[in-house]
Image (tube, rainbow, N blue to C red; front, side):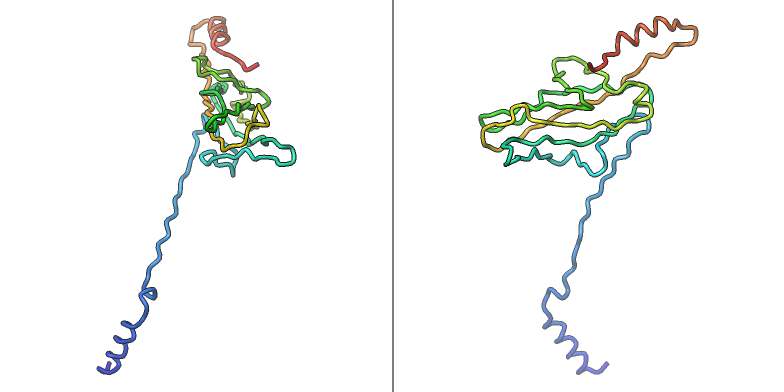
Length: 185
């Protein structure tokens, strides 16, 4: 390469704007949640329960809408117990909107007082898996204007059925299972 061509190339590269040499970096956050085959409770595909869900204001009816999704649930060794971990409500600076939490047409109540919840999905249904609708709706539908927020905390636990041990009494095992089962009513 001749000295003149080298100087011309060097001069051209020094005169080029810095953006010509800029690099771009893209960051993609990826997460995966793979449930066990034995026990799981997951929102239907496309619903991100980690994101804030919105109760939209219906201008025509002048009230908050109901928020709904479906939950896929399975327990291969018994039923599924569900409870609210705390009262369901939205709060603003001076106001509160109580919420009804309804799963498969059953309104859950606050079990934070130590009650262990109730068996919403019986063992016979939970073993094959089921999809139930979850709905959260405001109880007082015309609250004062404001910005409200809150957390609805549902706890799902596997119901463990007591198995008859070899040589054990099936009658006693049945009585114990009835004693510890608490179906939702």
